[in-house]
Image (cartoon, rainbow, N blue to C red; front, top):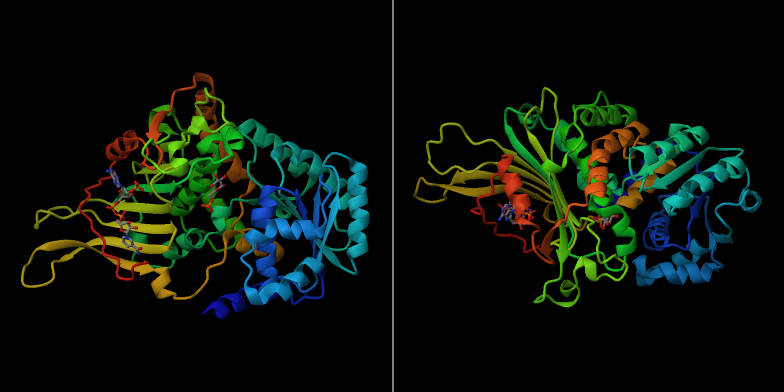
Length: 506
Ligand code: NDP
Ligand code: BG6
């Protein structure tokens, strides 16, 4: 199975490259000395390289302000690369394809110098990919200099941008206009790494490749939808960054909203990127700006009885201001005002320092009309994004045996049992491979981004102006109970009666 996955990746790549394995590619990591590069980008490039998924003649170029050797880079990134004992030789080969150049982000001459260096690596037709693993403060100057000095002369150029794409509609539009002045939309790849996750990508297949879901996927049958993201740890030294952005900008406005779009959108005309992105934009256009009345905001406090980090609250993080009212938990209710969804609450919930790691989509169906059994619970379809990818439907069955009673149970597709030993690629692996292939299906388009900011900007500004005090919740808890109350008011019924017995002890 593992090999099949790899083979299909390879053939996908080969197809879209028109069998042009001979074309050279240069992948430039701007910000190569930073955290994202170390933890995600270099490990991802290594995985793709060792699996033979990249075009044969690919070179990797690091660029950052620090002085650094390839050996230092290799040592820094090694802990994140999951290297097996028999891969040391391959790893050496990988780093042989790497070079690193020191340079600033705001000096045109240094980008010209980078371009000269790139040219020395290039033989014949060469495509260039630039990954901006950089703080947003330098996005504009770096992209200006890429355009000014570093565009491929004999091949295509693609630029990969990481969030945050601005802080609000105005700053995001400014950045978008800046990028649009330099590159065409098909040269820009805006990463939302949740779009690279297996189960997020599966949403479209589950919805549009199964006849049983289409007739019930609407306001007639669905009571409410909750999309959640939970992490069992706090900001852990990232407080400085986090405090500027907060959980709404960090997770809700991008990752969760993207999942909402895939859950709510109409069937696209095809699986072409533009058709899919057109449908996602239509969902966003049908959503009104979020208001504070439809939100619950929380901030975690230490649990005196907790262990280790759990004793520390958000405000105990030395990089966070003592007076910070930045939410580390947010719950928000939305309506999608169109014919399919009018009146169905879509709730997004996300938080740090909660009781578990989990990301899921929970679709709760309406009550069965005319319950002849007297104790029927609602059906729920759960698409668990992580951990342990699964799709399960909670449903009623006859209590097995002589009795004619009912019982809650599930139809369960657990990936680890159904697809034993099939390693699923990391989200970044898929997405970076997509950039090589020129597939924008799983990337965010300019107008999607603008719509997302339209929905969130007023409330973000209101929070910044009024500074409402977030509700404290204990590290390791499920977050403020006020969120459960809001979910209940919005037609999500939690009964607590469903019990799961794990057949595989996963
Ligand atoms: P539950 O009915 O237990 O929980 C349903 C939802 O209610 C969740 O969103 C849950 O967590 C939320 N909730 C929990 N407590 C409250 C509360 N007091 N008020 C309001 N909402 C609450 O069903 P689950 O689907 O969670 O299943 C139970 C367990 O079984 C889970 O651990 C699940 O992973 C496991 N399971 C695993 C399967 C698999 O691996 N294939 C298949 C089926 C079940 P929250 O709001 O905190 O996110
Ligand atoms: C990032 C957020 O985008 O996603 C982080 O900035 C968060 O705060 C992370 O921890 C979660 O990603 P994943 O893939 O670990 O669920």
